[in-house]
Image (cartoon, rainbow, N blue to C red; front, top):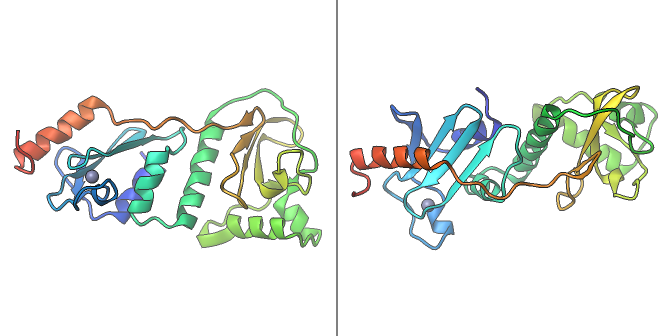
Amino acid sequence: MTNLVADILLSNLPARRTGSGWHKFNAICCQHNGQSKDQRQRGGIKQDGDTVVYNCFNCGFAAGYTTGNHITGKMKKLLGWAGVSEDALKRLIFDVGLLKHQREHGQRVVLPEGLKTVLAWLLEGTKESQLLQIADFLTSDDRMLDLASYFWTPDPNDMDLDRYVVTIKGDLEYPTGWWAYPVLDSSLPVLTQSGPDDEPEDDEPRAEDIEEFRRILIAEGAIGE
Ligand SMILES: [Zn+2]
């Protein structure tokens, strides 16, 4: 099963898969948490269904992500420590948020004022820098997102919406939801038809996952009992 966060973490870490499904490597968290760098392969990642967990048996840092949720603050830190660039992180947060929204259902809603597709604005010759930057974001790094499927409005709608790219669930005739990502200012909240989309509290990996990883490390002599 594809997990966007697991994919990007594993492609950025020299992880070695163990028989139990845990990927092991020198943890990347400890030096950021006031401890010396791990040299005993005490970091682990495991993907289980929709969920990926990271756990460190050196400094105790843990983070997780489940498809359909937001990325937590801890996971954002971890991705940075893994060397994921700010731009790549921004795109990941966009993809993850959109996936979350697509999983949720809604009745017909009222759309913000002034929305047209990014493509329609470009074809009209609109040169506003917000629009051009958003078009750039949608098509950067071979993402090739369809500019006819994403919306923009020059009308802030009392919520800075001219700094966002908007997607609509359903269509313009019968919209069942909208979701907006702050492309031009990542300090702004993600917005939806029912207001800001709150991020979750940081979650911890499940106790049984940690216990299982601990058993593997003990068996391999990486940590004492
Ligand atoms: Zn650590």
